[in-house]
Image 1: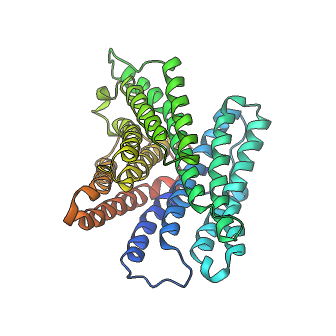
Image 2: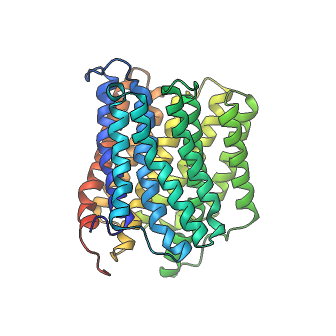
Image 3: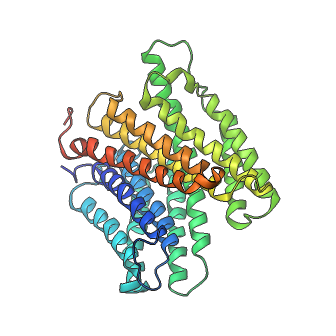
Length: 382
């Protein structure tokens, strides 16, 4: 059953790894965990949150959506199992890089996203689904970031920071592209079912301008992150995406947590862009606050929002949040607020970081427990 559909295996992997990797990082950060010589704890944390946790969530979503895009059969069975094994090998390989060596670690880790990009390309080309080629480009650039990380460990180039930065902001574009499809679409369907007399604005020229502004900022952020012009581009993109979100009428969805959490996740993207812009122009906003608004806030919230809804929908379960699912959303929101606010708490900043980590771990731990039956049992329509 776990290899019947991509979301089952990869969403479960994402939840479990998010639950385990953050406490492991805290033990590294606090010096509790003794590391082998040559192990870069901060790089491991950044790498695993991107290519381990987010990578699994991306694979689960894209591979599950692919049949709807192409009309072709979904990846399942042993091919899916092989891809999952590549993901797991990557986690073990990067964790043990100091012991097995950089070449072995690179081979194990790069196999997952490189193969995933190839699978997506094959399906889109075979299905002649040119509309979603931008998604392939984004996933390929995300994978390229992982290659750049390994280039540094292999002594090819000092490119690890560039790779992390590239993949982080490519993921921000992916959130904007996918979010721009599903948030207004799901909102429209929900409001129609409630008989509401309001609805999201249709996709139009403004959305394209907002996306273009974000792409221009991302290019500048990747190649010239310290220039004032890049900060102004971030402020522009953040403002435009805040307006874009407001056009989707999120305030009308507050009765259903499965809906408002999607809007909240997108709101964190706009907030993160504004904070990144302010952080580049003034010392009042620390860079760590801005980046965690993007990673914990936008990525952490949106991934949970998508995984919960997609898991329920694809197994024929009711699209309404239980108290447990609502608790997941509250916990991830608490984690994001505390982690972004930690630098402003001065003497209490370390306590805020720890409480944030506990809330993050609880959110993804509760997700893993509550949704384990969803991933391992047949749905109501199967």
